[in-house]
Structure formats: C-alpha cells, structure tokens
Image (cartoon, rainbow, N blue to C red; front, top):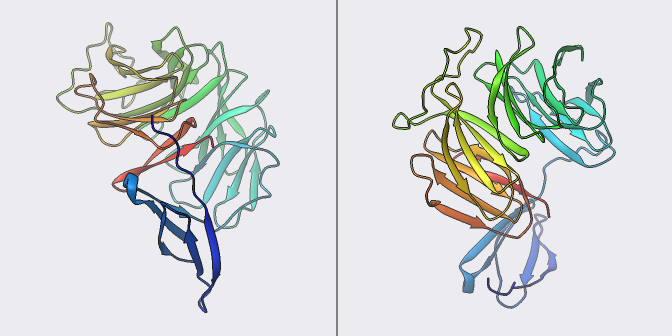
Amino acid sequence: GKPTLYGSLTRRGLSIEGVPDIAASEGFVVGKVTKKSILVSCPHENVSSKFLAPYTTFCRIHQKSITCLDISSGGGLGVSTSTDGTMKIWQAANGEIRRLLEGHVYDVNCCRFFPSGLVVLSGGMDAQLKIWSAEDASCVVTFKGHKGGILDTAIVDRGRNVLSCSRDGTARLWDCGKSACLGVIADCSSPVNGIAVGAADNSLNLGTPEKAPSEREIGTEGKILLLAREDKKLQGVGLQSRQPVFLFVGSDAFNCCTFLSSTYILAGTQDGNIYQLDVRNTNAPIQVIHRSGAPVLSLLPYRDGFIASQGN
C-alpha cells in the first residue's frame, strides 16, 4: 500500500457560541466544526472522516475493558461484560447499575438482550450459555455442550431458539423451553469468532435437511447462518438444512459478521478489512473497505450504512 499520511489539528480559538476554530496541517482540510463534531478531509486522497464526541460517558459501570454490550429493543436498558469479570444491566439514560448477573465461571465473552428486552443471553469462557431475567437477575436456563469458550451468540426470531459459536469450532442451535441442544449447525476445524443469522434471499439454495427438523425448531426455515472463522474463512450455512451455502476466503481471521439485507452481508477481519459480499455470488467481494490495519471487532447495520469498531 501507499505510505501513511500524517497531519495535525491546532485549535486557534473559540467562537462566542463555544465552537472551536481549528486549523489543519498541510495536505488536510477542516470542514464543518460543531461543539460535538469535526469533519477532516485529505483532498489529495479524496477521503474524509467525521470525528464525533460522545454525548455522554459512563465511567462507573466497569473497572476494566468492556468486551461486549447491547441495548434493549426499547432503548431503556444496557447490558455489558468486562475483563473485570462482571456482567451488569444498567439504565441507558444515566448509567445507573440495576442488576449484577453472577454465575459464569471465568470471563463472560458476549451478552445480548432478547427482543422482549426482559431477558439476557450470555456466553462465557466456561463453555456455558446462560439466560437471565433482567428483572431479578436470576439465571433461568444454562446450556451445556460446547467444549470451549463461547465467543458469540444469535437469537432466532423472538427467541424460542438461540445460537452460539465457540472456540471448539462448532455452532449450535438451542431450545430455550427445554434447555436442550437441537443440533450442531456447523463443525469447523477452527474457532468460530462470530455468527449472524438472517433471512436468505429467495433465489438462494439453502439445501434440504438430511432428516426432518424437530418440532422444537422455531423460525429456522429460510434462514442462513454466517460464521466468521479464525482460519480466514467466512462461511454461510442453511440454518434448517445444516448444509453449506458458501465459503469465502479472506485476508486474515474473520472476527465478526452481519447482514445488511437478505442479499448483502459484511464481515470484518483481524488485519482491518471489511468485506461486503452478495450472498448469491461470493466469488468476489462487492467492495473491501480498509481504514486502518487495526482489527475489526464489531459491525452493526445503521440506516443506509453500518457502524464498525476497530481495535485502535
């Protein structure tokens, strides 16, 4: 690639409204500036970035790095896990801690709300998947079956079935009502770092199940499961059929993946690439976005685009 361009920003003063007057070094241009954002561009390379300040910061929820967080569907509650060994539910408006969820052995890697916003799903290094009441912090279900730490989870429709992936190389489907494993959806020879489930485009052949699905499987038909794998592969599997749909090889380990629509998907790698693919033809990516060499850690669809977090 090309050599990295470096520049600096200097604050020259402050307007009466409290908006800073900012100048950029040679090769860079400062565009619109507000109290909460700065637009900086590099005309020679035809790139620009808008830097946003947080409108609120919660510093008292955790003592160490936050490894995962989610916000309830209504926006009222947050749940987060940290390298301080805790998992907490808190008020999204003010960061006030509501519940401490205790029961995993070792670190908790991932957490998410069910669509109801009243229940939380978590996965830990103890290879256990747990379901919690957000109202009283009780653990209502524990799933056992993985042989390695759980790295990500997904919820099928309203949540009668859930999915997990693990360092053991498998992705599993679980029945919440019976606390049972409904099957191994994929068994790779490599850790599965992230998963996502979504409705598949109608033209996509998802394969047919080798045996009739259990009546406890709810909402798996017509869905595809994405697997972000440590061995540089992004895999698509028919959720009900358990059959492989596609396999795409990237530049480095895949850390995360998500659906933009029933046709378009995104996946992020350890070396900073974000791949956009069309599930109907994954031979070549639609585009590869590379902002820096830092690992892409999470991807979230947002309006007509997406939000990505990187480890820098």
